[in-house]
Amino acid sequence: MSERETIDGTPVTEEQIAAWAAEAEAGYDVAALKKRGRGRPGRGAEPSQVIALRLTADEISALDALAEREGKSRSEVIREALASA
Image 1: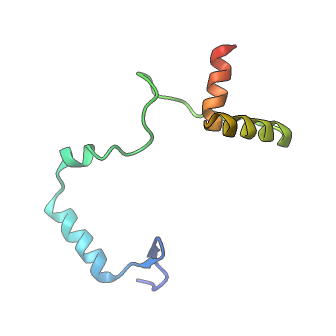
Image 2 (image 1 turned 180 degrees about the vertical axis):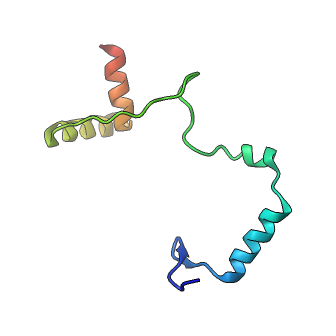
């Protein structure tokens, strides 16, 4: 393995790889893995869909200013604007 292989800046050693392989071969507790809560939390009963939106620099500045004033994310501000339309 190359000395340049890292995880968050920490070099990955052959010993670490062997330990990971041994752990995998021993098996994982599937129930415990499912409890980790990976990914973003759901927003409702149905899956959300990601869409692309093109905005000008001025529109982005206005959106960011509003989001900061209200203590919200860009997405929250946009969703609220759609809900009130």
